[in-house]
Image (tube, rainbow, N blue to C red; front, side, top):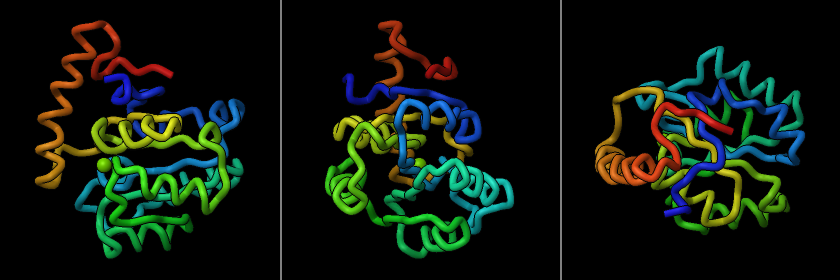
Amino acid sequence: MDKFRPDIYKKSIYDIDYEKLKKIGIKCLIFDLDNTIAPINMDMPDKKLLDFFAYLEDLGLKCILLSNASKKRVQPFKEHCNIDSSYKSRKPLKKKYRKILEMYSYKDIEIACIGDQLLTDIYGANRLGLTSILVNPISKKEKMGTKINRIIENRIFAYFEKRGIFKKGNYYE
Ligand SMILES: [Mg+2]
């Protein structure tokens, strides 16, 4: 169950202290797309998101979009935010994470993964020993597969809450 526990838990991508991450040696950020950086019905990044990625670039943090969605879905975000991306990533499988580790030659301790799902984003990151950061889903609107994952996820949240490990809405870093 430990593999489902995020290292950091924040309300949204805008509440994470990226300067602090940089200070502890993080060089690369892997972002989930749907409901982490954008709601599922948003096809184009908005100004706030563009400014956000520009800020991270200025900080010197490499950003990569790692999504289980299609190329068509990921492409506009990759282009406009000017970041690298991987689509149909099949998180939480290890393959794409390993590919990133090889391609960019970052060490596991230099990568933080940010996402809204325990079952894919957090479990995927923890399996590889990467820093895992959970954020709340932006919207309640979700794809069918995600809805099923949420049922299991709620049980995991209940498990952690029962043991006083962490609970929804109690943010930490
Ligand atoms: Mg997501």
